[in-house]
Image 1 (cartoon, rainbow, N blue to C red):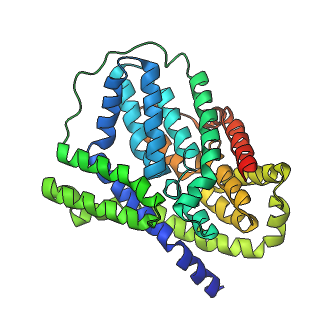
Image 2: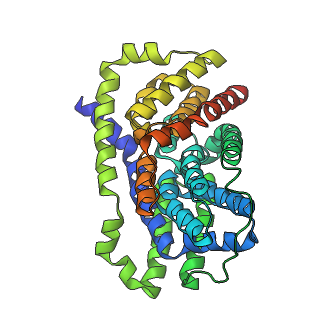
Length: 363
């Protein structure tokens, strides 16, 4: 048992290190004004069209998820979308649900988009380019469905116009452009094969140097330590240890649930069980439980589709959901757990089916 835990620790330390580093990077980008200024620029570019603004915000949420991970969109971008909607006098609901649906649904494309992806990449032994080649078609199919549902569901709220803001929020141009360049380089750096934790470390170092020159108080050692998501880190460590034991002890039962094979029916069964597990026990442990029974590339991709896109029915399905609900309440937007689940029912079955079908066709 000790040997198995040590093997697991050796495997997951890069994932946990990335979790710590990317959160610091995202918070420093927020301090630089990247998200707030970007949202206001989008409002000015949209020229007063609510639909155009909503589409641009959705594109921002997608890119943010791809490059800075699912939690960044839920924690940092979602509140900015809500504040922007309040400032412009338009409904906040389309922006709220776009941010959380795209935080989950857009987290399939790159290894850095979700911790589950990093684990899958390590299991499959793929470089980032190979991972991207395996996931881009299912990701595109899922996004088409999610955006279609968002546009239909909120069609009334996103039609019409608003008064274009005349000024941007105050910002430091050096820090803003440094953050923008850093974020723009994260994706290419990962795709060319640089380990995700190395990319996040490099991004953090560059931002820390920039802040040490312009706003040294923002990168004081004590503050940087407070930016580390210690609670999430400890939770993840505990999950890795517990799930490792559960999989070993319950292998026969789990195999009967997840099944085998790569037919469309087999993959649909795998996706269904994995999605239910993700909603019930959180997506990270759900992936770890399903992973030993995903013995091919297409089955691993289907598990990722299920555990990344599926947990939008129960709030605890992903940590991003809980963080998003807290952020909404802080901005005065109350969304009940029942409302969250009912809204999720509008999109999860269709997005899940689209992702599985795309994985089957391309696998």
